[in-house]
Image 1 (cartoon, one colour):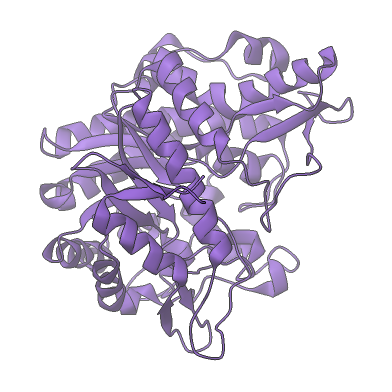
Image 2: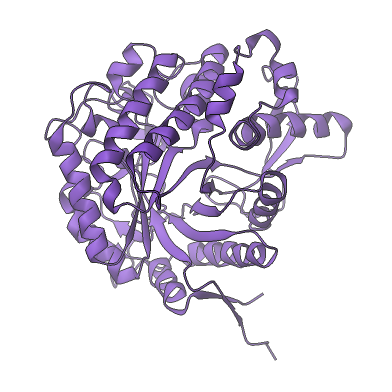
Length: 453
C-alpha cells in the first residue's frame, strides 16, 4: 500500500512566481524609440541562431502585456520577474532618455500591482545597447559607469512602486558566452576581453546598487541573480578533482567572493596569471555593496574532468551516464539543496531568492488543445522538495520563480527550447496554460508541494 503524499508547507509570505526577460518576450524591437541592442545585431549574423530566428517579434509581450498579466493572475502568481530593456530607456545606452520606453515599464508595473503581483525588475539581462558595444562593450570600464547612470534614472522613475530590484542576470554568461566562447552576443572570442568584462560587470553591479540606494525607497530590496551550480569531479582522480576546483572558481567563486567577501579567489588570480586584470581595492569595495538578497538561478550541476586542451583552466564538463537528462542538461534536483546550503554556509547572504529554475520540454498541443508536460511537473516538484529541504536547514529563502512564464526566444537556440508554464503558438501568439502551469497554480494556492517520494 502506497503512503499518502506529504504536503510540505512554505512560509506564509513566500513569493511564488515566474520569470522572463525583455529580448526573449517583448518583440517590438524598433518601436516607440527603442534603440538597437547587441542581440538585434547578433541575430542578423548568418549561422549564429538556430534557423536564423530572432527576437524581433518574440511572443509580442510589448503589445500583449495585459493579456500576460491576466495569465499571471490566473496562475495565482505573487511575483513576476522581468527585465528592462536598456535600449528602450536609453536608445544609445547613455544620454537621451526615451520616455515612451519608461512609460511601458511604468504601465506594466501598475498592471501587475493592480492584480496583486509584486514586480521584480532586472536591469540587465544580456541586451547591451549596440552603441556601447561599438565603444568597446563590457571590457571597457566606461560601460560600468553608464550602467550606473541608467540604474539611477530607472530607479528614480519606477522606484516608488517596485519592492525588489535585480541589477544583473548571470554576469558569468554575459562575460563568458559573449566574450570568451562567442556563443552569445556580441560573439567575441577573446579570454582577455572576457576577464575584463567580468570585472566591469561586477563593478557595474556595485555602482548600480549605490545608484539604486540613492534613488529608491529605503524599504526596497536590492540583489543580483547569479547562475550557480555545484561542481563535482568526474572521478576520484586528483587531476579531475583539481579541474573541478578550477571550474568552481570560474563559475561560482569568481562572482560570489567579490560580491560577499570583497576579493577575487586567490586560486583564480594565480591560475590566470598575467591575464587577470589589475583590480584596485576601491573597485573591490564598490563591488561588495551590502545586498538585501542573492538571486540564485539553478538548472543543473556541473560534472568536470581534467582536459589539458581546454584553455586556461584545463577543465571540461562531461555528461555522466545513467542519469536523466532534459533537452539541455542533466536533471539533478539534489544539486539545488547542495548549492543553497553551500552559499548560505560560506557567504551568509541576508536572504536568498530562487530567481530561475526550469526545464525545456518538447511540448506541443494535444488533439484536445491541452499541453501535457508531465516531465516539467516532475522536474519542478523535485526541485521544490529540495527548496523546502533547504528552508528546513536554515537557508533564508524568500521566494521561488519558475523559468519561464511563457515559451520564448531562447537566445542562440531560437524557439526550439520551450521552458514556459504557458504554451505559445509562435505563429498566432495564442497562449495556452500547460499542465505544469495548472499544477504550479495548485502549489501556490496551497502554499506547499506534495512530496510523493
